[in-house]
Length: 168
Image (cartoon, rainbow, N blue to C red):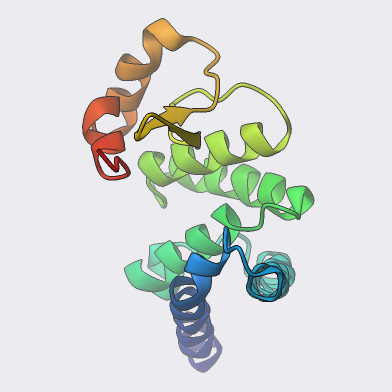
């Protein structure tokens, strides 16, 4: 089992590295690059589904910090596989409740899943686009509570967060 877990950790980490290398293609003007990104994230989503079948949520205790973060990234980018995202969200929620996963990553995955379901997000982590060089978030369920909700899970204030994306 130990060997399996070590191999799993390596596999998750390699998947995240491939994701990082090609994430720039997600919104490429080149349809072939966009398609390559979609195929990669679909393949990764399918594999994450198999991993969740076998191990449940790959926590840091099981696979180490880096591989656990990789699993979260793969779930985060499984945008066309809502079943995978919802399942990851459910398993990660259980892991957070037992202290085996972080509430910050869970918040990002929850927002991503809500947006993909066509619903309003809670934490304002998902950006819909740019307007006059400034990032615009997808609509939020409780806009007046966004900062409070973000603080509860350890996400920086919205203005600091979006400054990373700003082009002005």
